[in-house]
Amino acid sequence: MKKSLWLLPLVLLLVIVGAVMGVRNGIGPVRQETLAQPHIYAYRDWQSTGLMLHTGDRVYIRARGTWLYTPGEYHGPEGHAKYRAPNTYPIPAIPGGILLGRIGDAGQPFAVGRGRTVVADREGLLYLRINDDILSDNAGYVEVEITVTPYEAPE
Image 1: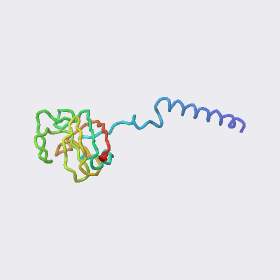
Image 2: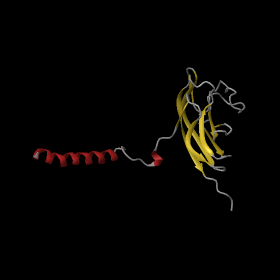
Image 3: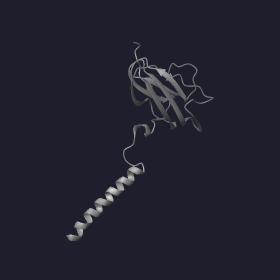
Image 4: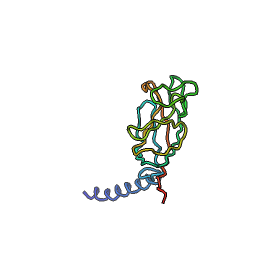
């Protein structure tokens, strides 16, 4: 019994030291600005960024990374240099595999590529995806950085 009583403070001390070391080494709570940027996967349909936009908000989207749109040929969010996009969305003359955006469930898709600034024409969540009609043969992802400047009505 006496032996277990002196072990309790020792175990408690070890837990506290371990917690302090964990926080110092980046384990534990982190600041919001250090969180990982969202990944948009090439093999998934429209993916929510979790950002609710309001009419007039200015949204800057920047993307980097690689994904597979055509078997054996990885490229970035700007799309494939040779292959045109399928006519799934009414956006003329854009490359296949380009990063697309949409505001809300019924918003018109727009090309994003490596980066674009858009003014929200409606209220809704921001969605992103690869421009492809067959997602099952795609792989990889792009990482996106999104900055929203809220709309300010003129006085």
